[in-house]
Amino acid sequence: MPLDAIKGIWERLKSQDVKATTLDIVPYGGKMCKIFDFETPFPHRAGNLYMIGYLVGWENQSKEIEERHLSWIREIYNYMTPFVSKFPRAAYVNYRDLDIGTNTEYGKTSHDQASIWGFKYFDKNFNRLVHVKTKVDPYDFFRHEQSIPILSPP
Image (cartoon, rainbow, N blue to C red; front, side):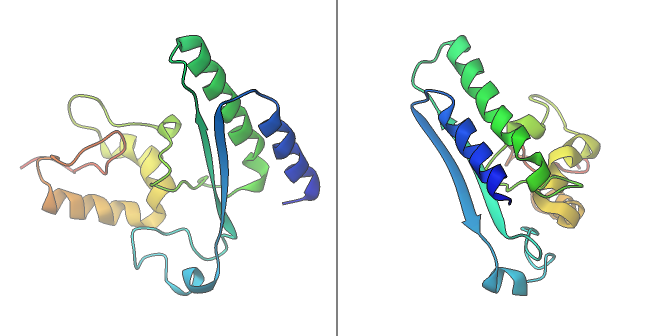
């Protein structure tokens, strides 16, 4: 990342009076690059220098405060677009990002719908994980906002 980009992110982080914010920059490399992307569900290895997590917290539960904080962290996320992975922009499943899509609250989520976030989290492993999930959890009992979908219930 160029120095100007780092200065830009720093200015954006300081631009709002927020109670809690974190920008995690976790370095990659070493052993991470020696494991093939298909050996575990987590594919983001070779060529990735670091992983970035954007977090913001607030105590006041008003809708106005929520929108202000979410808008601010989304601005930072968008600012980083030229400096991060592309096609797709990757995501880390343990840093959940509900902005990239969620399961249908009630009923079945289609493979196409789940692909929106599934490929960002799991890349080429997504389809394999869908087949595994369909075999081990055919009734989709283990489900959350971005869980891997099943192909169809038995």
